[in-house]
Every structure is written in structure tokens, then in C-alpha cells.
Length: 323
Image 1 (cartoon, rainbow, N blue to C red):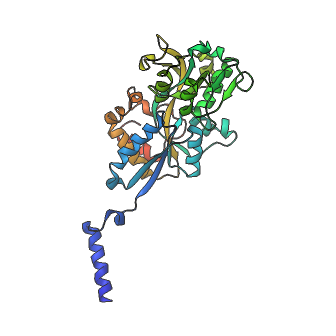
Image 2: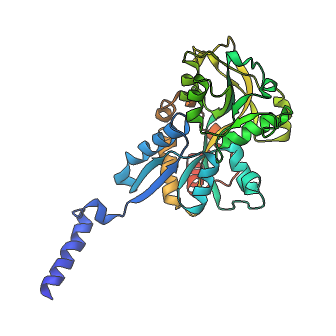
Image 3: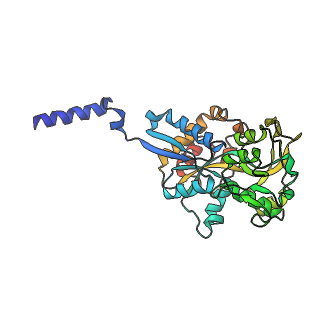
């Protein structure tokens, strides 16, 4: 009994004076961030956030990892099921999930929570010069990748097509593959054009415009009509200067959304607070991690959010006067 008592006393003192290893003192919380394809901006965004949090692992007890996924719809569903703790999601998909629309028709995702928004994303259409496609209306009868099921871009593509009187199931030879595969298909002549909703510059479009097959960005008409119908859309453009190989001489008008960072109401306030704090306290460093972040402002990162802001994030925003 005496030995047991002495051992108990030693362990208690060890905790007080920090002699017990960190993994015994505090359990590490593992979180996974769902992103998108590795050639888009979502994947490096998730990586940047994870890197910041992991640098303070001893302080927060959080270990973050990143997963490449099918995109926004997958991320919302995985966050809601608990398979992911966080996800990068297009602002329109966040809106639809909260309202019980589109893939969530009649099933609003009441536990979905916003953390912050990130970079703007343009619905971008690229086509081979040889296809003769100069405007979205020229897509009829063409081989076009509209995006894989489970991605946010797929619905953006369909919205753009419908606004221009094009039925994707009847008027196109539609492909539905991931955006990462589309540049290769375009360069190989297996498709004539593809849509991708992404922040610029994008690795996918750099690849698409740098090959032997000449490629141009294509304007999307009836943007005003789209914005009037869907409040989460806004005017945007493709900055062609970032793609030297593109066969365009001026920026191309289109529309877009915002990338947002979401979680579940079931994720702890402490975890969400820590992640929010690391991103915003290191804001200037975060902005330099990808060219698409250059336009970010702290205030702007609270815009485009349809879901309620998670309590952990709200705690931080109130502390620093952003809310």
C-alpha cells in the first residue's frame, strides 16, 4: 500500500510540474479537413490551415490532416455525418444545404456551421480553339465536361447552361469527370470544353492552356439573369494574364461564388476557436500562401456565409472586434 501511495504521489507531482509526457497530460484531438482535387485551390487551402494549426500542436492539442475529396457536396455530407470535422465548400452549396435545396431537397442541414469564407471562385469555361466555341451558347452539340457528381462546379455548370437555353442532358455530349482529369482530356482532343469553379490562378487551367492544343477561355452570357435568380452568385472574371498560354487578349467575364470553411455544430468550440485564431492571427502569412488569397480582407472573410457562424469562431470574432 505504501508503494502504491508513493507512486500516486509521484504521478500527481509529475502532472503539476510537467514531468509527464504531453500525450499523457492532454489527449490529442484529430481533425480532418475535406478539400477538393489536388490541382484546385481547395487542397492547398486545407493544407495551409492544417499547417498553421499543427505548428501549435503542443499548445492546442490538435492534429489536423487534409483529405482530397470530390468537392463541396461530398464535404457537406461528410461533415454532417462526422466523417470530416471541417470542409471547404462553395458558398452556393452552403446556402443550398442550409435551405434544404438541390441535393438536400427537403432536408435542411441544421447542424451545418460556417467558420469563415476564403477566396472568390470564378465559374470558368475553357475550350479548344479548333472547336470554334467563342461563347457558352456555342456549346450545343459539343463534348463538354460539366464536373463530377458531388462537386459544387457541376451545379454551377448546369445553372450557366440553363440560363443560356441549353439542356445538358439533351444538347451536350456531357462528361462528368473530376476537374483534375479535364485538362488532359482537352489536350488529347477527347473533349471540346470544360467547366471548373475555382480560384485563380489554378493549376488545372495552367495545365490546360500550356499544351500543344490551343485553348481559350470562353465568356458566359446572361450573368445578370443568373444573379437575379440565384442570390449567392456575383459577377466575376477570368484574369487571363495569369495564363500566358491562353488564346485571349483580355479578361473574360463570368460569374462566381466564394469558397467557405465549414464545420458541424457538434465540433467543439475550443477546436474551432483555435483554428479560427491561427488563420486570423497569422492573416498576412496566410494571404501569401496562394495567389488566390491576395484579395482577402479579414472583414471579407465573414461575407458569403449562409449557415450560422460556429460558436467557437464567433468567440474569436467578438474578441477581436470583427463581430
